Image (tube, rainbow, N blue to C red; front, side, top):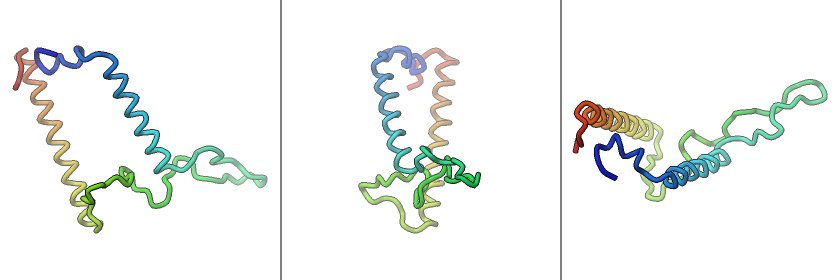
Length: 115
């Protein structure tokens, strides 16, 4: 793989992208079974015509993004500390995306490697 980073995507073999998509699908499938209620049989009407069940709802005790994986015990136990850490992670991720966009923009403008 050579040249500016903006051209690397096209140079990566297709089997890599197939593996990536498969891995993401497996992780998302597991997350769905961990955090969401089973939609089979939900929102069906009973004999009286009343709708039963909650389609598209979380399991009790599930927080979006929290799948119970914290092997190093870094997740804060207090809500205020957790909210602070979550905000910091979101802001750092946003800053990283802006930085990558700047590198890609520079490569597009100059046609040479940025780094």
